[in-house]
Image 1 (tube, rainbow, N blue to C red):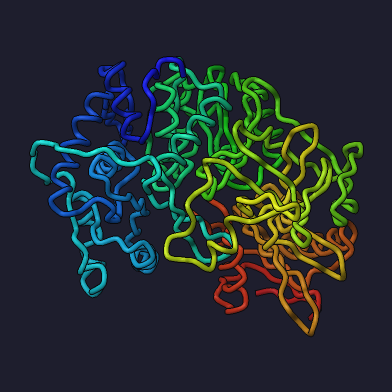
Image 2 (cartoon, rainbow, N blue to C red):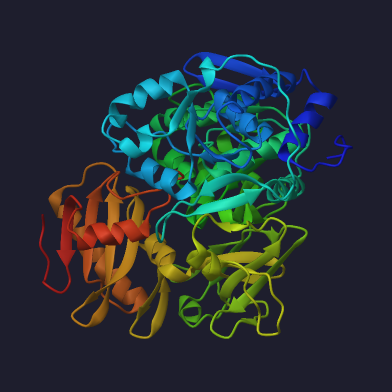
Length: 574
């Protein structure tokens, strides 16, 4: 990023530098319905400072401010207003009308936020839900669009001050508040820029929620660092009509866009390229895919389906990251096709990587690229804390300037995750909880330690089994596989959502096929296979299945079953 010549100490410096260099250049546009709002770097700086001046009347430096905005331009203005006022941003999801406020209450209580910065429209939206919530009513509720214009008198933050709190997705446990500093953010967005090869000539379409780090850091701060425009669109619009995502890439001739694996699956399942506006995806150079396991069948299917409309397989860009390391950890090379590795499943059960010819029985892993610069990534045997060589599966440990300060108000889980030491005395490592291996300098993710199933002494990963089950039917999208203690033995339960309708005979046949094929390929028969209607499983904002909540819902019999068959009981339909 040669255009930035001054040293950046804080994220505020980043905006100030953009405002100095290219003040009239478009930074962000936001599309809502048929309306589009445009914001330049100068306008972003001016409006953020005005809001920061008013915000200072309600807060002091270091206070936590919950940010409750739709994922649009006002969110970005308020985010920078908090940074200008040296308060710590806590981005949160707006509760839906059908939801209670338990998640919002949990995040506010955990973060210690004393104020909520929102808009009058959002405040009106949730006001009815607040009536009986004394804890939330006690907060200062500030409508950003009603603040007066007063002069801004700011003071510079320290680079090691907390900038914002990112709540984790909570896929394997309850959500945690990750404390990220200005230095963490600047280091990581610099790595995103270099790894993606971003320049001022790029253009992005971003629909990811801005209260999630993939949307906020990848879709706002990294483009600001590199200096190119971003076209924002509501996540709800894309989830309602996935074709809109591809239409916007066509209209804006975007070079950068992406999302979790499920978003590409949505396009595979629900986009008919011939039914809507003409598609031309030839400009799309980086279709980043992360935040959940990247499936080889998704890469191949998406590339094949949209090749006639200009999409290049080399645009598919698998990457790996996590909130505790701000965002990116590894990624591929721009304009290079993703690497696939066909492995012997029996070897993987013993933590061994053996490449085999592709077949119905092999497991295909997708490379998440090489680790980013200025980062120490090692593969570790967790029990002995010994660093492992290439092609050996272990836990991924990280050390870099991107590593967060810890979890807010959670000393126990901070100690479990941060500042770990190898057996040779080398310390300061983050334990990611993810397992994988390095091969020819490329990182391959195998699974999560907490999603490791041990059945009769053999190791199986949930994401491996889920991908296997989902290969049996095009209507199988989200699913969860976990183990339960039944009859003094660990038993495997399969939950699988079904898109569309299935005749009763088809349901029974699929369930029997799943049980039979799991026994053939993996050597065990599941205790129960449960088919569920689409949208039944608990998921995060980025579409990842919450395994912990799925297991609790199953054990509590709170799932609405479409069809279930218990191998132990001989089967029953519901």
